[in-house]
Length: 229
Ligand code: SF4
Image (cartoon, rainbow, N blue to C red; front, side, top):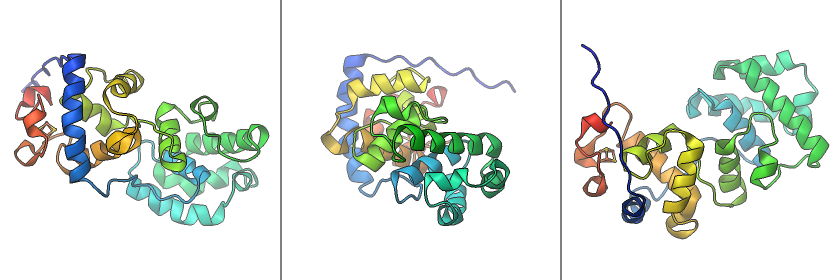
């Protein structure tokens, strides 16, 4: 049987803002321990973990970085081995050739242009190979406490379901969300991403959202409407 066509999502910016301000405090209360699932202990290691997490689960990345971070303690260490050796060390995360190339390229740039330290601005972070706005916001928010909305697959799916944005392009979506989500209140932009990711994993998953047990169902325009999922 052919899959039913998804209904079009329409968003009124004023209503979206009002809705956002109602749901964010509820999510904050529901997920007080929300945080990034990747393990890291310094901004560079977070960058490496985020690069590895593309098309890979956080659980798998954490398994790989457990040994990786013991072997490669600083950016230069990634340049002191042949690319093939690094590829083998990260192989199980998938797309390992490209990931190894980006990690080594970023290590080289960091040493050459930033004194070996992770930069703290969006513009500078975007110059690192493998870094888009999602990665940059993740580093800014989690490693440096600078507010940033990380638009991953959960944030894209839930923002659309919740009628906060009609965009599925992560950059357009991020700019819509920056107008709706308070930058510093209720945990701010960084925690908003974590709340949404936790909600996406626990209740509002991709295939079968559990609307009956959803604490924000009363404000959700997609509640019990499979045609909008
Ligand atoms: S009501 Fe349903 S669709 Fe809406 S956020 Fe909750 S689980 Fe997701």
